[in-house]
Image 1: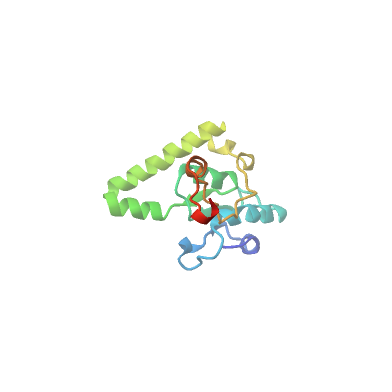
Image 2 (image 1 turned 90 degrees about the vertical axis):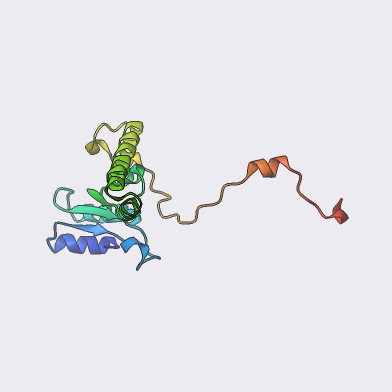
Amino acid sequence: VQCSEDAVAAYKAGLAGCVLSNHGGRQLDTCRSGIEVLPEVMDALKAVGAKKEDFTVFVDGGIRRGADIFKAVALGAAGIGVGRPVLYSLASYGERGIVRMVRMLQDELQMVMRLSGTPSVPNITEHHVITRNLADHIVPLPSDHLTLGTYMPLMPAARM
């Protein structure tokens, strides 16, 4: 599902839930990721009376760290799909890589939960994340203050 209207249609059709995904960006590379669609989907489902217990929403794609899992849960996801990290771990280290990857995600999620003051998953709420810039795809490059502030810029001899 890629929009709130489809999620509401799935709920009204009697489905148990949906998966928000842009299919790894391979087929829908210009579409929003599942995490970007999640807040509007949850708002639309709430508006038609759906409860988390009645309709389960999963986010697939873009999960690389425990903080990503935390954000998805905070915004209303019941679970997440992990694709590329599994493939990379399996291809590089086999079964041990998968086990290590899962442990890393668990450790990172636990650390984010501790730092956020959420002792358990049910304590994670939408108040723990900032969503106003969720759809920003263009991230400005940081300025190199060392170079800009330390060295004199080169100037043509005619301007000296």
